[in-house]
Image (cartoon, rainbow, N blue to C red; front, side, top):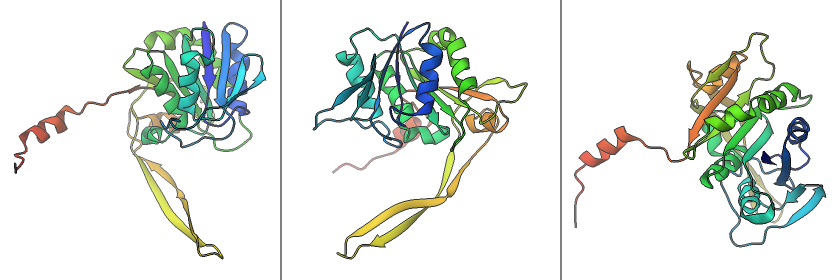
Length: 248
């Protein structure tokens, strides 16, 4: 099949390289990835400026835009072949729970699904080198047909791998956890009196309930979550319908 690889860590990310190495012998693989780190860009797209691409290698291009841009322009013709599957990753660090709201990795997969193309976001729950991407890349390569077959146009597939797989690991079908952020603001005033703010903090905690993606990772298992594109909250709908709004 024809596969588009992208990410939010940039064209030189070792996770992207490892995935390409595992897939290129059996598939027609194209790469369109940001020319630098775009972590946390979420679903942002470029509307007012031109998007620049540059060849890096055969069938491999860097892109000045966001992860969602990479997918959008590829599917609209920047990649000449019809794309059968988009894989975003392997991300350097997890994309768990409500973090996927901010994630550029998840956004690239979401953009593909919005364009009716099967899509997988893949992340490794380790934040610093050395990384061992082989188990993750091998799992994706061996199960690519199954994962593509599970996809439908209403969702994308979000996969997280633990830093180290248990010897007897299982594949858990999960739903996103609730992430709690311990953020703080760092303020700096420059000599010309401009004020700069930096987000900092002590980390992030998860609800870690059974059946959630973060719980699976803590137990050394693989987490696979179908992430719907259009959340529906029927319980809240009914509450809103019962409200008696004032007219004027």
